[in-house]
Image (cartoon, rainbow, N blue to C red; front, side, top):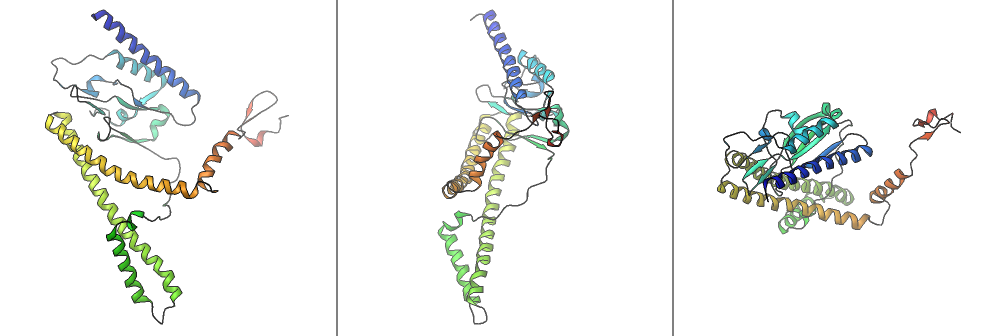
Length: 313
């Protein structure tokens, strides 16, 4: 393939990407309600100098490719902004590592509309763990009050292990031995034992959760530190250690996912055919489809406020 043909193919691909972004934005804008967030793998970077780190050192700075120029033109024309770059105007961090080229780049972007910028509080790039891309975390100022704590639920893993069951049984035997007396009625002792068992299970569950969170935090910290070193000086040994740590983190994540799946199966089994939250969530979408959001007056104008609907025939 000669150079002229390759140049024509690259130009065609760049124009196709720009046309796709414009088309996607127009579709999103037509059905948009509220704030606009456009996030994903754009396969190009806004600034080559800040958002890439090649595997081999270059004697000359890399020129800005057409894809980056077209991406910046798209951002200017749509009033969209790179959220992470707003918070980190001169920092260098990356979301993707190419093992083939041993290079880093920030091709994953979270674009927000200009009207949302005042509510943006923080933006962080996480570590590359179970995927080959790093997550991006954005913090915004909420427009609604914080949600309170939910009801306590039994951690079913505390009644599966033999050691946990033996410990809970010992607590119950000690409780009834101390409290079933002539001065205390059996009904009062029976009702009070529920609070004792619940407090015991909450304590054991909190201890196990702290140990699990500490282990996961330790692995994530090691990945973050080693990844920072690898971004500066990529070596095969560091990449091998990163792969091992990421595999360990996946195993820890699977344990928490297993418990979440068990809870989901339990909820579906017990509430699937009853009038509860699951049915309410299904009916909510039907109710929203039948909702009348506005009326037309005699002149054909839309009226959204019911108090102003006196002139409608």
